[in-house]
Length: 230
Length: 394
Image 1: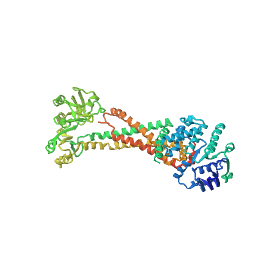
Image 2: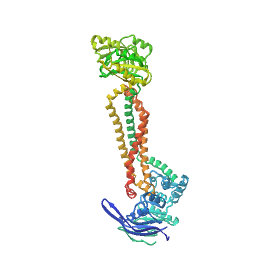
Image 3: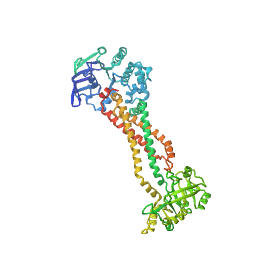
Image 4: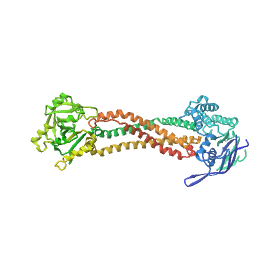
């Protein structure tokens, strides 16, 4: 855990609302090492989700640099950025964001369509990922046939399937009861400890944040603590 | 890379098919709407085609000669003999529009006073049994009726048919001596053919100025490729006379009639295209609603690494699936409905066949509807950022 996987330097983000510029992040400097488990905390509107989106490559900074594994993703053109996301980032969303018309197996298999794996290889990988999240017996179930916790586990399997370096989770337990939330946090722990995945989790729940090895606080777009060191 | 594209392509169709039925009622109604539009388009196109069918089926070896001034003017019957003497002409006959009313003017069927000795030789597609033809030729008041008209008015051989003359005034009584059938189902079986000699002799006594005249002279020529030259030769026979002529092929003659209702045909064609435009707008609205509802899913796909092209194809695939389903249903329904339409309007059309060109136009229209309806939502999905899409409320 010594090498920096993510290196953020003087990063700022300003949205444009009509003619009005709305600054969201100011001069962020942050280093995250490979294999770290970091929680981004802060009140609503503090910019934590925006920072997560920038790190995940689904948004672009207004200024500053954002190096992930040596690649400045802020400079990548849209198509290259999409390919980069496909192979380097696994997403876990608050509301799971599963395709309702696809069953658990098909949802998890989805990112593998961007690879050159054969159908048999895709099946093997998908079954393994679903087994890892404890849903081997629910492969044929559609999202509306699964509980919230189960849907989030399908989403985690989908995030894992392409073996990304980085997993970003935006309020992964925000829509779950305490018991299901614990299951999900245990699962994220395992991914970090057993598989060595770097995890960045946005949460405003201090109990959730405690599960991370490191907590970073944001307030009004400014990083307050946990920045810099590993 | 190729495997990846193949995987995505297969998935697009699977996802599009599944997405299509997420709102069964909405999709079902849209498919039904497209089917109705495609059926209407097909029927209207067939109406236009059928209007031209008579002309298309005309013999290319028959020429029609009429007064240069107007169809309402007749020509001396002696013109027939002069035309017959022209080299290349193999037969001539003539016919006059009779225009009688049977009981009341709602009972319309075309009536012609014909030369009984030559008319059927020039129209071999009118099949008359020999004994009936002979009975007709030996009875001056006899008529030969087309099967369709005979069936409609329940005329049988031996029946008397009274007509009130309009062109040739007076009360006329005819006896059905024969019923002709067409050589094939494209031949007009609605005509009511009576003796020109009988009409001519009768009218001589009351309106001598109308006697010994013919409205249309029909000539057969040995070489249809020479139709234009032969037409000019016939007209040159009567140039600078009191009754100059205009000769043209039977097809051109019939197209001239169609030109009189050209505006109606243009209106029908316009309606056919407007129907397609309306359903296109309905379909575009359906796709816009579907795409708006799925904005978060599209954003998720893009976040996972799928490109704009994948989402574009997903929307296009769904739109095309709905439109083609409606189109195919419409095409399938066109056949029974066209048959029903034809039976309800038998007096209007000689034939009412949905051509393969119309079927291609129907399918093409369905695909066009699908393509156009997908364009706006597909571009919209491309324009919206992943972050905004993920925030979208569904």
